[in-house]
Image (tube, rainbow, N blue to C red; front, side, top):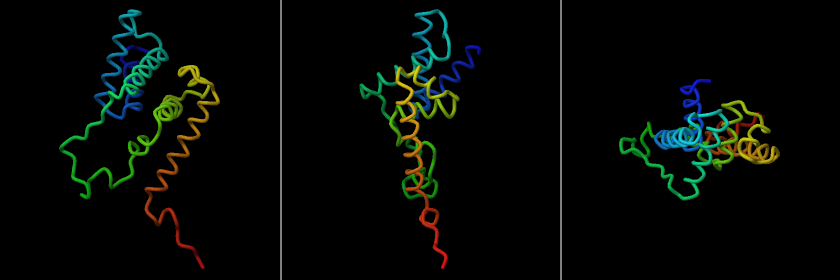
Length: 157
C-alpha cells in the first residue's frame, strides 16, 4: 500500500472517530508527522491507526474535541434540517468512542475482533462486547426515530 492510500485509510478511520472532517485531517496530519519524525516513514497501517487512535483519545480525554455547527445550516423545523431525518452520523454519534471505533474497524476496514483487539490492546471478548453493544444501540436508536407506522404496524383482524 502506498503512502497516499495509507493516508486516505487513516483519514477515513479518523473521521469515524471524530465525525468532523477538520478534526480528522488534524489527527491524520499529527499522526503522520509523529511517525515520520520517529521512523522516517508512515510504517504499516496498524501503526498509523494506533497513532491516530491514541491521539484521538488523548484529545478526547482532555476535552479539546469540540463540535461546531455551521451557521449556514437550516433552522430547526425546516424541511431540510438534518434533525428531521435519520442519518448515519446521528446514529454513530450515540455510540461510545470505543464502540464506534470497533464497529468501523470491523465493518469498513474488515478487521476481525481478534485483530481489533491487537490494534487496541484489548481482549478479543471486550471487542466482541463493543461490537454487540454498538449494533444493539444502533438498532434501538433506529427504532426510536423510525416513524410510528414502521415501529408498530397495524394489527390485522
